[in-house]
Length: 81
Image (cartoon, rainbow, N blue to C red; front, top):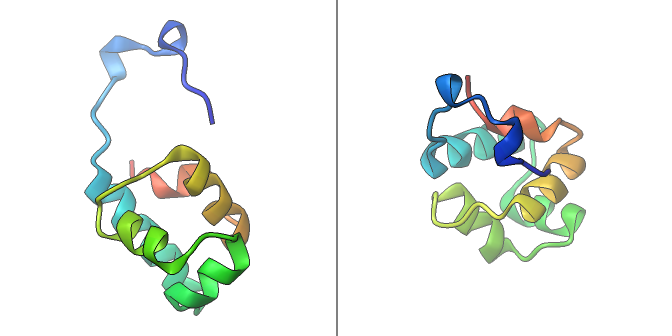
């Protein structure tokens, strides 16, 4: 996922909280019935990385893409509107 400042409409720009992303990742994981360990195996991350994301400590876009693919949801599902 790439965001260009040239494409960003400043009048509609809002800060995306890592906490909000974290909650959406956890909600999507639980919706498919995965434990953190299940998701880690499926997306190729370690459980600690997923826990960091779900705790709002770190939201690396590359990791979010892997998680979204494993859960079969678009990355945009992690960005609450």
